[in-house]
Length: 236
Image (cartoon, rainbow, N blue to C red; front, side, top):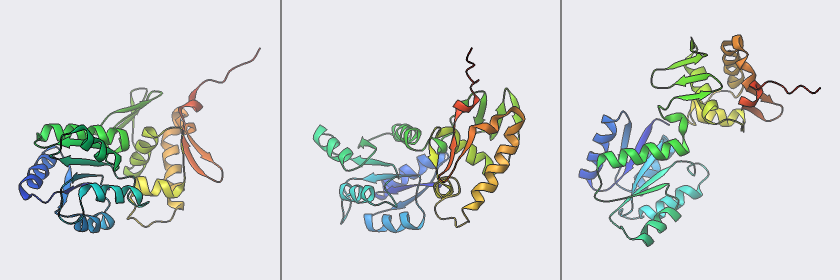
């Protein structure tokens, strides 16, 4: 998932949003209707959808509801755009499954702030926020990983895998889920590929025993846990 999909039938607004996203470092694509948007989503699931309420044919409200009811698209965050500013309308938009709601007219800066806030909640591994867990520090913007201020090197896949783990700690993920989240749902590779990269990641972390944070859960998958770095309690 690499882009933001703009679903907006007014070309001037769609172009303004696309320009603002490009300046902020995001890739974007656009669709003027729900039907065209669905085809694009199935071909290349976006990172986030900016969705206008008033669309020709299927409304943005109904489209958001259908996306959230579909297992393939239910986890894609949605920001609803609308000229409707009444509280009841905002509630309807959020109840349809939208993650946030912004009223027209709006500034590009406001929209970008909303996008970043939604991504921090729903997909923290896609942001450039620095993540730190028990002196293990990952800087996405500069592609740097350090332990106790000592920089360590790793391959790009291991970097993405570690970033995902650090932003989703204490939860077990299957190999299939890790493939979808780190490699992408449109990339077809064997699930055992995950094991290869887990071994490589553990290898670069083992000097400081940080490889213990990546736990194998038999029969399920893998978990990233900072609890494994805590000193054991000694009973006297």
